[in-house]
Amino acid sequence: MNILLANDDGIFAPGLRALRQELQKLGKVTVVAPMQEQSGVGHSISILDPLVVRMEDDADGSPIGWAVEGSPADCVKLAVYELLEQPPDLIVSGINAGANTGINVLYSGTVAAAIEGSFFGITSIAVSLELAEHFDFPRAARTAVDVIEKIVSNRPAKGCLFNVNLPSHVRGEHKGIKVVPMGMGRYGEGFEKRKDPRGRTYYWMTYKPPYNLDGPETDVTELTNSYITVTPLKFDLTRHEDLEGLASWDWRLKRDEP
Image: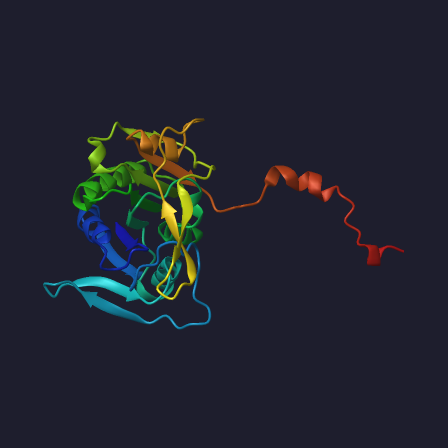
């Protein structure tokens, strides 16, 4: 199996390094990742700037993969169109340093790389690890590959998209895997107001992990409860149930009326 590995934390990120090592048990892994961290860029792509690409080596001189001066979505798009001899069988993005649950999925460069892969009709999986003071990426990578192998063994339809979140090791052993929807409520975000040395006001985004959330089970609640969460995603934003009703409205503009 040919696997394309991308991320949004950059080609030298420890999460990518750990996942690359474990994914090699499943097949041939090619890395195409951003040169610099691209957290929170969502599904942005580079239109006005050229995409500079170069092969990066590890400390022992062995090649890591292609580094792209662009976004995660750029990396996947460029890999499929130009850098790979043939499209991969599987695209994996991660491991991200910090969970991508709830509405944060919409901001995530990690998830965007997987979405871009699904555009090509390739099974794509985003993997993230819950925020902690210290990340145990090797342990998370072993767990992630077990989950990825389970997904692949069930032969999902081409282009299926999955978002996987792993609980931090500080919670101890995970309780299992839950397939849950994406949470839609806001949580844990805010801004801290500060003054710089010149007296100018600025704001720094803050984040607090969610605790004791009420309501139905979602990726947010179950990750907090120490479960690995798997969420099938789609990128069609159309409200199909409203199409017929909207089409029945009188859409004649005033200037078009007799």
